[in-house]
Image 1: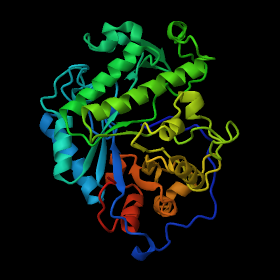
Image 2: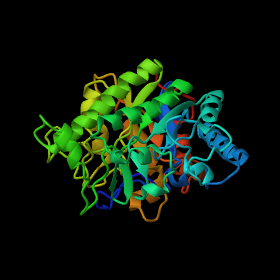
Image 3: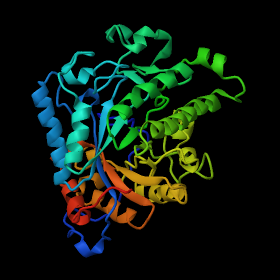
Image 4: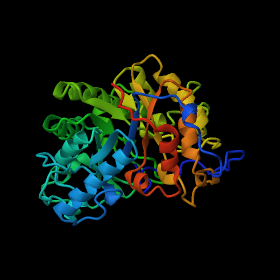
Length: 411
């Protein structure tokens, strides 16, 4: 998530796309699209490195609150019905947590009280506007650097230095330690118990994305806890399976109506690796590289919803939107798990992106394509800043073509 680009997106090579409609095409007529009384229309609101909000650290409480409400108002103006708000970006908190320090992205100083409660305010104000508020947590990322001394002295990562591993220029909690998995669940569940959030939402980071030439040094944990597994990869996947399964149960115990959803990188496995995988040639596969069996979690019913980040255009050779939507539709079919599609609004109008993304109609075509797959119950846009700025009019085109009528989120 990420972000700056929300993820390690450069995992597949760019490919030109021919034959797509141009920006001059007439907008789709209202009668062309099925009216939907219930579908998710959401945006991610990222706080990590001040990606979307607050616009910079150190704003006053009043300025932060005004910016936050401005994003909620933008969601309403774009006829969305949910906001996915990042409230635990780096083992910290955007609420008064007894487990972890206040986020440095608020005041510029980790652990410093900002003088107000962003998550509590977001929940209350979103609901006042008829929006769902999904609280977005990153389970294991501790810091975007590798120096524990830069963390506040009371940070759990300093109190328990054995919990933490450096990798790829960042610090992570070690998912292989049962104490870590319990702690991160407890920290997140504190927010569930305090506030009537509509969902607990996890992004695509489990074990970190691979970094060439670097090793995630969990030898000691594997030696202690890996007995009985055929290899380290199986043990790592079991660690993440345990995290997901346990959190699924604990969320419902804490607040029965709160949903649990995950937004993974969209390629579970390539078909060349596994015949049940997608017809893709991505450089990252969540099952093999992030040790996240996202397809398995759906099939086992551990999630209420899944939002694969299908961040590629229609016709993209290595990972085609038009091939991934049918694949994910097949995965969720008959499971009761709702399928929403993560959309790369941040690419629209970015001159560094392939030609397809320069066309304001590309994103609208995604929704038109997805309408032919009844398992798709909505879309989530990355991210809030682009929803507001709308660099090339792609979001306005989506609203005009698909969101003429209001809709409530799925039950």
